[in-house]
Length: 300
Image (cartoon, rainbow, N blue to C red; front, side, top):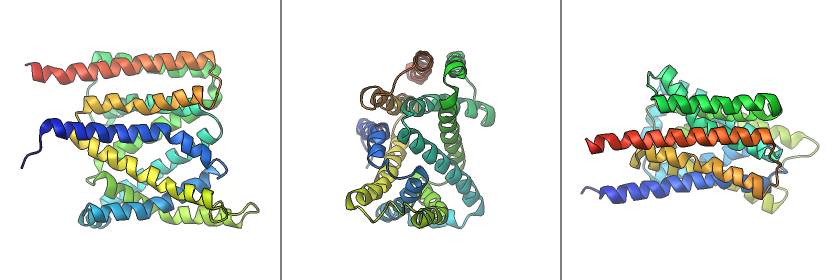
């Protein structure tokens, strides 16, 4: 029996909102675990994401897809690369939040959709419309402003945008679903993650896990905040038009920006404000063009 298309899209919308709202408010959670060094936290995040992913894979009966991917060398090669990219992204993001570079982290994810457009153009043969080229150029102007006044945090924004943008490009090439893919990435990263947390356990400060119940539970919760938003995103990607998903994508960094201003009390330098203005305008042009082009076939 066919599902009602309106209901199909409504479920996709709620799933997308669930993913991006969770990612947007993630800095509040990261502050609760700010005593955990970024590398150690990423190690625990990987360790606790894996069992949760395996449970969801079992519940969704995606075991055969997971096993097929594990037995395919080409798929495993791509996923090894994507696992490396997402690990870099996690470390830099967590380090940025814990060191009060909230705006730099937010900016990285404003730039990300535009990076995706450029990567698609250069590597996938996709074509940009004139408004999209204008948005990319405007974003480039915004980033270039930071070269003069915020060079010390520019690397954070660019690393986050490039690592996640390239991660998305790599995953686009892999014939495996989001959840089985994340599960395999967690498997690939498990050994280095275990090595990292074991090393921290030998230091003078000791391991952050297992000494204080509240902190240990918060560390375990990191697996939930990793797996579920990605699962919601996978559902949304299948049920929503790209134009709609592209619009919602700007929700997460907008929440992060507001948190930086209202909760973290981070000072917003004039050059950062000018940069954000350029990025916001570029994002607006980008989304407007996607929505306009998505309506043309329906009108013809």
